[in-house]
Amino acid sequence: MRTYADTKSSRIGVCLLVDTVGHDAGTEHQVLVTARELDKSRFNVHVCCLEPSPQLRALADRCRIAVFPVKSINSWEGLNEADQFRQYLRRNRIQIVHAYMNKTAIFAVLSCFISDWIVITSRLNTGYWYTPALRAVFSLLDHATTRIVANSEQAKRIAVQNEHLPPDKVDVIYQGVDMSVFRQGLGDPAACEQLGIPRKSPVVGIVANLRPVKDIPLFLRAASLVAREVPDACFLIVGHGEQLPELQRLAAELGLQDQAFFTGGKGRVMDYLSRMSIGCLTSQSEGFSNAILEYMAAGLPVVAVDVGGNGEAIVDGKTGYLVAERTPEKLAEPMIRLLTHEAERKNMGQRSFTRCLEHFELHRTIKDLENYYSFLCSHSAGGKETVMRGAHAGPTEAWTGHARERLPDHFSGVAA
Image (tube, rainbow, N blue to C red):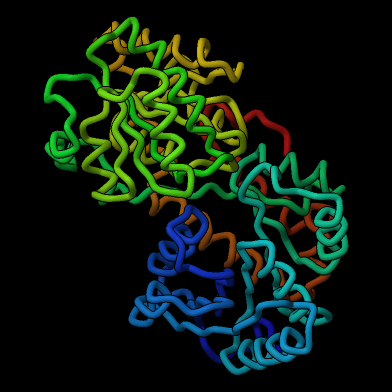
């Protein structure tokens, strides 16, 4: 098996492995952006999926793509595709396989078992989907995984706790936001007028797929309380999903039929952000929210339930408010305060933008990932086991120090 030192090319071969990039969701978007933005002079980038999609085909001019169609990994078909994947890695001199989802994590580890490939799996949320069976599977796979990447310190803590991982095997790398797309001053506020939102009404918005884990009903119930105190406020739900009809019914039941507006997945998110006064998030579970980063980039103060990595993006009381109690009353309080204190809202939004620019701008976070890949390859000369052992063996201790220098200021004291 080839290692980085064995290859003739000076570029590092990286395979980003994901079930699909065909869905409009955070992880799929993250893989697409990473594939486009990784420095092609340093990395030979491949994106491999378990199913085809137009979005994958559109990447063909930016990197190499391949499909390994697997419905069930635990089948002859799955074993055959795993063998095909191994041949693909050898043929293209891949050194790093980075799997982003559960199914592809299993596929990657089984494909690369007893090899010199560096295999990275991801933990991108706080494990609300964990079942005893899945915990058992991951505990077995973790022994054959080189490194594990979490997108927040909280996601790392949950993974360590649930999977009984040594903390020094899990590295934290934040995702970023493309501030050429999401940025204060961009967007067309008139898009909201087309939905029927009055030009002068303050708008409180939430960007999320309409599914149970995002808990949009909590947002609507809080909105009904805000409307009593700020009668001209409007509430914008940006996203689509299976819950749309029931959420529309709930809004009507709460008396918000003239104040709650649903985009149904239509239009550009930045256009809606440019019209918002506050960005909200009510999820039951988050790793590190793309929506929060987009709010910050758009210069919005953020009101979010304190779950997952939300507290690593938001500085409570400075760039937004973290709500500890999942009740409509507690969520409504900071919304009302910001809507009735214009100077505070604007100052908080500006601090939110500055924080995003300094810590979570896409090119900064991509650079962190590039350095991480290079770091692991440069220490693979001692063999895969050296990298797997983590800080006890030395190399990742240096990486941990580097990464901690890049943590947001208020979070730099968190233990690894």
